[in-house]
Image (tube, rainbow, N blue to C red):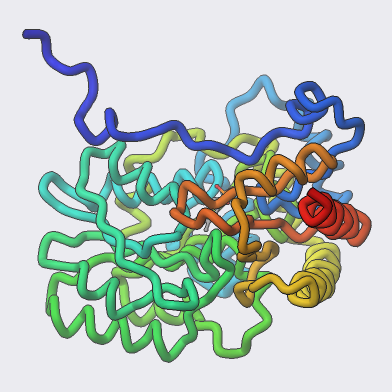
Length: 374
Ligand SMILES: Cc1ncc(COP(=O)(O)O)c(C=O)c1O
């Protein structure tokens, strides 16, 4: 008998399903100007200075980029007030998720996270042929740290905590994270798992109780804080994320990454975006205002909304959400069904510009009106 081409873990995977592209909806449904609220992108876009820097960097695209990302590293280190050697860059923070699993979860080890969380943790773990464990969420769809702790054993090498979490928008407060880490370290002594605090949506957090992940990194070397230029900085297409961790872990991650994983376009865009904090802050402020408005409108319509600290909201529409997703799409609004997370009545909706959110709320009202008329 011939050997299987891939591991059982890879065979069990399904390709990642991204939000439906605008062009596809235009083509398939004949909708002229669809609005995409499906992938948690930043509707306000990047700083114009970043767009200009990327265009200028294109003139040097025949050259390999700086594999060490020297200038971006120096500038980011100064911005974060961390030593440059603590930073590892990735082709999006998604690449760092993969690198952490590949570097630290060895044969027979497992990786733990919460259910109803970012699917890349599962893909990275199974792709590496490692055991993937999920802990059930609490009643409010929040990450249950006691349950996460309960899934850990002496073979757990990495714990992923998305904070705020995608797709729920919930976040873990500093006291809860501190207690979790203390319990983990007490239980596993000298050899505790690496805790990854994935803060892709950090800039959208307005809760003062959010933990200081960089302080935890300093205090506890087996900690990685993941951040990205994809969301608040509006550079999802440029692919630039980073991890901040101990110099030791950063060194290992740098050994296994592709030498040129950050293009010169990504580096130029990220540097200019970082230098234009005002643009990012304006986009975030506008998003938070709209987040409150959309949340209020959904509640007024009678739907249950999970309180969000990110640039999207998750709502329970108390109906077959797959059908509602189709109805909204016919009206030109692309949202994200949550069936893959076992939430059949929920949709996740990215917070867009006011006019885009109005399109969503109007389409929603029209969909339910049609339902009532039938
Ligand atoms: C929680 C979380 N982490 C990481 C990422 C990856 O982002 P990127 O690879 O664009 O940095 C995402 C993207 O949606 C996310 O939701």
